[in-house]
Each structure stands twice: as structure tokens, then as C-alpha cells.
Image (cartoon, rainbow, N blue to C red; front, side, top):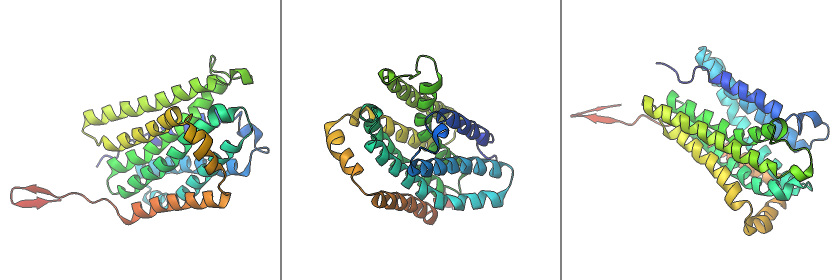
Length: 277
């Protein structure tokens, strides 16, 4: 059997390097000043990308034990990653920066959508672990939820025309967000078209596209709505850190438990009077 995406680890590793560059001005160059929650989020996000690289490399190099153990490690990592993401969302909502009312509060909707979409994709990937074509696509789809935030900062910090050098230019970040999510959706659609033409499953990347669109539309449509800006966002920011972390651990833990405990099975097909599996 030919395993899917033999070079996926190379592409995911390349995205990781891009992410390091994109977040260097706002995070990596100011590690001592960053809140502990940002370190929590940065470490868990980094470990998730490393895990995806390890999973892809190990399965294509027949390192079955490494693949199996890194998969089990995800059962611990995913709840921590979701909890860290929710905690950073709260910090964003409470930040006194001019960025907060312009983009922080609207983008918090996208962050919350990702905190649901990511564990859902992970659940589907884990549930379909016996079917490589589906498993690989669901797991790789989680990367696209990270593309928007990373590429938006890459444009804002390094691409002429998108540079933000003063508070008066902060509005340009909206251009970067729109373009980064547009590129993420376009790339997923290209993969879906390619899979459809090759007779491969289209639904996994379709779910990834849905999750990415939910993030973007949440930001664009709900982010400025009064019920969010004046109500729900303040309610979320008022929650204690312990409540938020517990919720993240439960969401991520439930996704892992359900995916591991209820694996997908091959549907039986009836051929004449015989049933094949």
C-alpha cells in the first residue's frame, strides 16, 4: 500500500520555519516580557508541529514504534494545546493595546472557533487512524488553522505594502488577515480538487476548509457584533484562568478519548449474495 503525502514532513517543517520568522518580532525577540500563557501556547503549538513532522517522517521511514509513541503523546499534548489557546484568547481580550479593539476582540472569535475546530479535526484523525488516506488528511488539516495567524504576521512584519511601523498603520493588519486566510482556503481547495481527480477522499480536507472558513467568517461577521464586543467577549475575559484551562483540558481530552475509543471501521459492501469488508 502506498502511503499518502511522502513529503508532508518537509512541508510542515518549512511552515514551522516560516512561523518562527513571522512571530520573531512580536514574541521570540521579547521572550522575557511575554506572559506565561504565551510561552504555554508557543511551546504546545511548537510541539504539535514537531509531532506532525515526526508522525509523517516515521511512517514513511517505517519507524513504526516512533509513529505509535508520538501518536500516543498527542493524547497528552492536544488538551494542553487547546487549554493554552483559550488562555491566550483571554489575555488578548484583556490587553490594553490599540490592537485589541481593532483586531484582538474580533479575532478572538476566530481563536475560539479554532479551539473547537482543532480538537474536532484531531478526533476525526484519531478515529480514522486505521485508514491512512483519511487519517493523514485530517491530521494535516490542523495545520491550516495555524496558517492564518502565522502568515498574517509574516505579511505585517516583512512584506512591503503590508508593513506596520506606527499605530496609524495598524489598519493594514486587516489586509494581512484577509489575505492569509484567503491563501489558506485556496490551498485547501487545490488539495481537494487534486484529491477528487485522483479518487482520494475529499471530505477530510473539506472539514479542514470548513473549520478555516469558520475562523475567518467568525472574525469578519461576528467579531464586530455588539453581542460579542459588549457581551460575550467580556464574559469570557471575566472567567478565571483555572476555569478556562479546565475547559480546554476537557475539550482536548474528550476529543482524544472519543477518537481513540471509537475507531472507524470499514463498511461492509454487498456483492451479489456475499458480503465483503
